[in-house]
Length: 187
Image 1 (cartoon, rainbow, N blue to C red):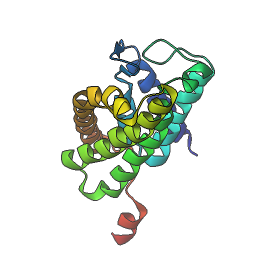
Image 2: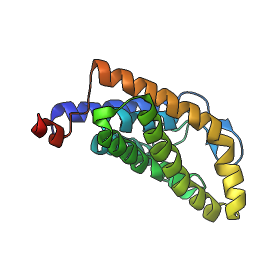
Image 3: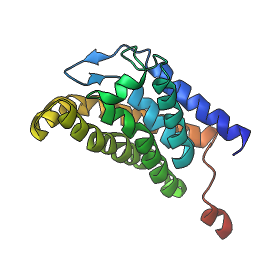
């Protein structure tokens, strides 16, 4: 791994941490935070592998006790609570966003960016977070969806669009993701 890659990984872990400075809004067992924007940006700007590693680094920093989450918490206890599934999903979500971004790279635009962010940054996070919430908080699947997904749809949709807008601009001015090897070989 190149030094440049390590710097990008650390930078996007830091961006996710900085987004935790935006105060969380408690709307039940799961707070509304800006940090999922960092997850989407990591995948959309860095690609699958580096996006995954940036969010994994962030979670390691949280696990060792740094208070990087929007609630001002950190430590292993957050991985045993009702929001653990959402946190654990972040590296996977960044990977999916990045993987889709890499697949759309030749024709990447705002629409493809939003699609990648919705699939990876919303659907993947909910698919992992909601069932863990239901299990940890002893909620029915319906109650977990009502309290752990529905209140976040509009905000997460806005974050998906914002991350796509930023990723499109980064791709135009300073592309971090390298062109897929197939595209390079075809030239």
